Every structure is written in structure tokens, then in C-alpha cells.
Image (cartoon, rainbow, N blue to C red; front, side):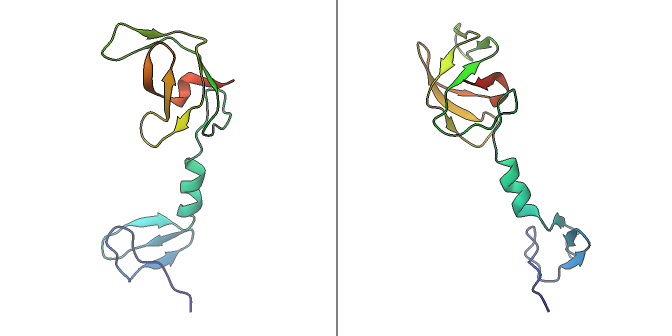
Amino acid sequence: MSELPNCPACNSAYTYDDGLQYVCPECGNEWSKTGEMEAEAESVVRDANGNPLVDGDTVTVIKDLKVKGSSSVVKVGTRVKNIRLVDGDHDIDCKVDGIGPMKLKSQFVKKA
């Protein structure tokens, strides 16, 4: 008989298979059997055009972006070199010439 995984929420060993997902009868948690593969697929960061981004790419800003706490603006067409992808609400860590270190959202850039 195959081993079923413990519940990720409460670590209960009494999980059962329910078609395409696992269910925990103790806490009621349900999770997908392919949860690991979905998490990997979600970790792909894409630009405004849907192209995948990787560390070290060069991107171009597609919208004027106000810099929080400053009167500066990152203008449309600004090229940002050597980006670094991070987890969180802002996907990209970078250094913008003339402004300094910034965090950008991938939806406002396109791959150059």
C-alpha cells in the first residue's frame, strides 16, 4: 500500500486520497496532489508581454513609475540591466541609473 503524505496544515497522518486531491479529516484541509509542480510553475516570473524573465536579464520600463518617497520618476524606455528576481509583491530587484536601488513589478517591464 502506498504512503500518503501528512497534512501540510496540521501534520496529521490520517489523510486520504479523494481523486485529484488529498484531504485531512482532522482539520478539513484539502490540497492538490500536484502541489509541488504547481508551485514550481507559479515561480516563473513573466514580463508584461508574457516572456519569462531570469536573473541577469536586461529589461525596459513600459510605464512612467513614481519613486515612493521622492519626486523622481522612472521614465518610459529606461533600460535596467542585470536584474535579480525575488519573491514577494515586487518581483525584481535592480539598480536604476540616476535613482539607485529599486524594486519593480514585472508587469511594468518588458524584456529587452
